Amino acid sequence: MELGNISKPEYGPGPEAPGSSTPGLVTMAHGFLRLVQPNPLPVELFNFGQSHSEFNQEDIHELLLYELGFLVCAGIGVLFIIFVPLVGCCFCCCRC
Image (tube, rainbow, N blue to C red; front, top):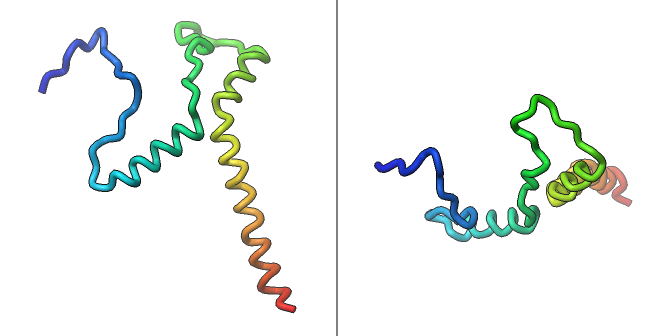
C-alpha cells in the first residue's frame, strides 16, 4: 500500500459515495446531507494558530447560516418528540 506524499496531500472535489451493496441507501444519505448542508465550512473564521479567538456578530451569523440545515432538522425533531406523544395521548384518552 502506497501512502503518497504525506506532507502535501491532494484533495479531491468532494465526498463520493463509497462502493456498497446498498447503493440506494448511500445515495439517499448523501442526498440528505447535500440538502441539509450545501455550503462549505467557513474555515477562514477559525484561527488555529492562536490560543483564543474572539467571534464578532458577523462571524456568529455566518456560522449559524452554515449550520442552518441541521438547526432546522433539530427543531423539527424536537417538535416531533413533543407532539407525537401528546397527540397519541389525546387520541387514547379522548375517544369520544
